[in-house]
Image (tube, rainbow, N blue to C red; front, side, top):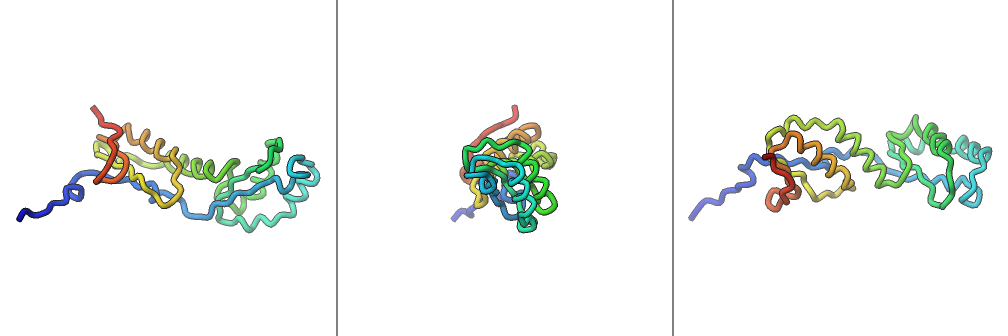
Length: 167
C-alpha cells in the first residue's frame, strides 16, 4: 500500500489570510439625523448644542462610521464637528457606511503591509472569512503582491483559482 503524501503541506505555497490583519475593536454607525429638525433640516445652534451635550466617551476604543439615514443635505462641517468630538475616544472616524469603514481600515493596513517576504513565492490569498473583509481588501492585496509574487491564487490550497503568474 502506497503512503499518502500531503502535497499541499509539502508545497512552497504561502497563504495570506486577511482575517489575520483584521483590526480588533467594535464598529459602530452613528446617525446624525437624530440631531436634525424632523430628520432633514440642520439648525446650526441646535446641532452644536446636541454635539456638545452628547456623551462621546461611549465610543472609546471603537471604530465609528458617521452617516445620515435621511435624505437631508448635510454640510461638510457638521461631520467634521462630530469627528472632532469623537477624536479623543474613537480609534477611527469615517463618513459613510460600516462597509466603507472596513474598506478604509483595510486600505490603510495594506498600504503599510510589507510584501517583501512573498518575493518569488507562489501565494494564495485565502478566500473564506468569518469576519467582514471588504472586497476592496482582496483587490488591493492582489495588486500589491503582483509586483513581487511568483504567482497569485485565490481560495484554499486544495481548490484555488489561479489569478496571476509571472512570465
